[in-house]
Structure formats: structure tokens, C-alpha cells
Length: 542
Image (cartoon, helix red, strand yellow):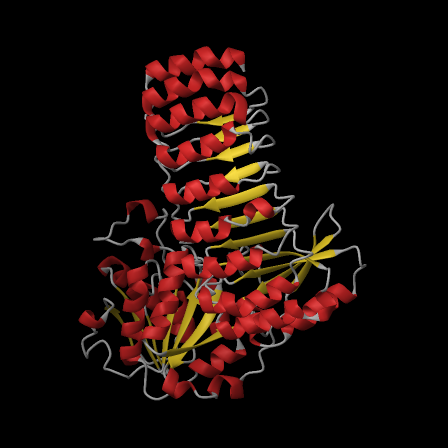
């Protein structure tokens, strides 16, 4: 509580964590507290939360053990706690009785109900009538892509008109769910205000009030209908966003500027970047790391702000790395950012984009950018729908990187055509290649193996092809390439490649030729005793 006094809530919960026993038909996860619940509780206890809730009609969706709603009940006029599990609803009733003395609502204005979500399951009038709830609460209630829209449909049905609000505490767990939630915001035409956690949490933003680490992207959101939001939140708040964090990289003459999506709504990145460069020696390089994990995105407007910061004259020769995670820039955003990336091309040694929804159109733009980044040493693309066309656009310039040592193209929907494009582009300086979890078969691996046999990667020490269905033929292709093409190889990852007995029998005799090999991963390949014997016979020669 903001005045320093402890607040006690009595609540039953399950003795054992029920996640493993839950099913789609019988969800038991409401019997315990989840990680976002303390975030919502502390917001409710803050002055801004109390002002929002005082005298309001409040309903909690997916209430579970009901602690946030019970806290709201200390100041609100009406309280409804809901869940979709009958046993959880029974527990909610007991938890209300345990806290009856502290709940300000009259007994007749306090109730529990079983409530399903979605446009096809709007609540009966005895639970709540349309547009009758001032504040809808929810914490850790978006757990699948389909639940995101269903939750917002129900909240929109309930929210008073005007000025109804959904207060949502959210923990990112799966990028697909983050994206579905953001798309649902747009579909329901909701204005989203992200309340800085530091505005109501005394603890560091990286830790929840119960001491457990909060993942990147944990947030407290206020959602209102866009045609009603106007400037209400801006007028009634003085939230201050902490500037991007500047972190020293141990054992390196380098700094990292860690940027979140909300930093790109004003000039915070430009001023922080200028301060970082101005406060360090000319020998210190700066990497800019943009992490928009959660139901956020780097919109074209935000991309423009980032571009302004990176393109400033003070950054000349000082930006060594640009790394983006879950930014969802899209082709328009990358086109906006591209000119500034080109201005930093001479000093750039590392670039990565992870989970940024880079398709072939965006890859074409990035390919033009990378073409002028001649000093790149590390390039990483992971969880992007590049496809073969996208990787072709990126790969055609890779061979021109005189010092490229590390290339990652993981989970990028790359097939055999894309693998052939990579094979043509491999630079002789490469020491690490990660093509894991794509759609490459023995045909594509054959093109790569041919490149290795031609001596294109004599310095390669780490090779990851795991999660590609290369089959027995893939084992045969590698058996021909390894003896002469990868003399420096130290780690080979072939997990989940469907090698089977035949593939491993072909591969095993070639392994002793890799004199430096110290790591070999072969799990989930459907290998039986016969192939295991062949592998055992090869091991003494390694």
C-alpha cells in the first residue's frame, strides 16, 4: 500500500499447482494465483487505482481466487467476481465471506457468477446488464490467441458508456498470443494506455512485488473505447516513463541502450543515445536494443522516432549493433527505418531481428540495407516468416561481408530454394551457421553440402540443422561433406532431423574425420539399435 501499511486479504487456493491436470473441457488454473495478479493488486492499492475504483461498479473476469476484486471491494459500490469454472466460483464465494468485514459493498451488491467469454456467450442480466460496469478487471486471463478477442468482446459488452474501462494486467508468454491481443485491440477499436509499472510499484520493474522476476513486456493496461478515450488519461495522470537503460557490457568496450516500445513515443531514445555517446570515450561503441515484447509494436511513427535517433550526427561511427525483438515493424516500418540504418552502415558489426514478422517484402528492404554494411560480423534472423523469397533477398549480399563469422536464419520458413540461396552466399569467414527449425529437406542440404565440399566454409566450428526434415538422405549428404568441407567443426546439431537408422549409418563413418568435434546432438531421430552400434564403432576414432 502507498502509505506503507500492510494490506491483508484472506483467500483459499489449491494446495497443488493444477496446470498439469487442466484440460480444455475442465480448466482448473483458476484455483491458484498467477504472476500478473500482484501487478493488478498493487495498481488497485495505488492512489491512481483507488481514484478509478472509488464508488464504481466493478466486475472481475477470470477472477480465480479473487484477490484483486476483493481489494477493489474495499472502495467500490458494487462488486461481481466471475469465472468459468463452477468449483472456482464456489471458492470465490468462500473467499468473499472470508473478507466480508473489509468489503465496503453491501451484501446485496456483492456476488459471484459463472461467466463464459465471447460474443456468443454474453452474460445474463442477473450477472450484469450491457454497459453497466464502470471498471472491468483482469489479470493473467489471456492465455491463447482465441481468448484475446473473446475477453475483449465480453469486456466491451460490459463496460459502461461512456468512460467504462478494462484494467488488464498482462504477462507475455507466447508471441502469437501477444500478437492476437494487439490485433484484438484494433478489431474492438480500443484505445490502450500502458501504465508504467514504476508509477505504482516500489520495487524494481524487473521484479514483481512477490519477489519473482517479471518477464520483459509485463504490463498494466487501461483499455477504453477509442471514441470515448479522448484525453482523459492524459489529463488526469502525470506518469513518468523511465528512460532507456544504458548497460555496460562486461569485458567489452561497449554499451547497450535498451529501448522499449513506449520510449519511441517521444524523444527519449534520441536524448538517451546522445547522452550515452557524449558520456563515453570515442573508443566505446553502443548497441541499440529495441525490445517490444508484449502486445506492443514499433509502428511507422515509432520507427520514424528511432530513425531520427540513429541518424543523428552524434552517432557517426559509434553504433556497433542494432537488435530488434518482437517489434512487428512490417515493410512500412522497415522502409521508414532503412535510411538511418544505411547511415550507420560503416560502424555496424552486428544486426539481429527476432520475432519481427519480416516477410519477403520487408526482407527486400533489409537486403538493400545489409548490402552497404560491409563490416558486419554477426547477422541473426529468428522467428521471421522470410520464406525462400525473403532469404534470397537477404542472402544475395552475404558473401560480400568480408568479416561475417556468425549467421542465424532460424525458424524462418526456409525451404530448399532458400537453402540453395544460402549455400551460394556462404562467406569463407563463417564460423557459426544456424539454420534450425526450417523446412529444408535432403535436397536443400545437398546444396549446402556441395558448398562445404568446395571449401566455402573452412573455418566453420558450429553447425545447427536441427528441426529440419532432411531424412536419411540428409545423413548421406553430410557424410560426403564433413570429411573435407568442415575440418574445424566442433559442434554439430542434428536433433529432430528424421535421420533414422539409415541416415545415421551413412553419417557415422564420416564423424571421425572431424578431428575437433566435441559436441554431437542426435536426439529425436528415430534411431534404433543397429545405427547406435554403427555410431559406437565410430566414436573411438573421434
